[in-house]
Image 1 (cartoon, helix red, strand yellow):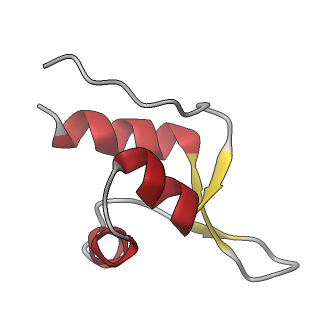
Image 2 (cartoon, rainbow, N blue to C red):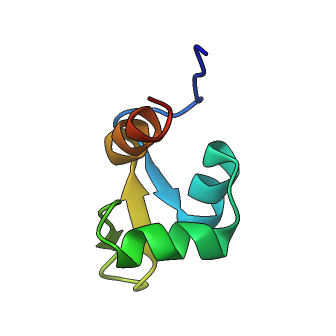
Length: 65
């Protein structure tokens, strides 16, 4: 299976956006984050949790092997 996702390596994505591109529920995404499988960052101004595009791609590639 040669699956791909449409994510920019340098982009920043919200939890909702990340769950949508990965095709998983937000609660599943939160579980992966809690398990340390996907690193997150926080916007200082808003406190919003964000995920870097490169991290999403690495996570996706590990999941689809």
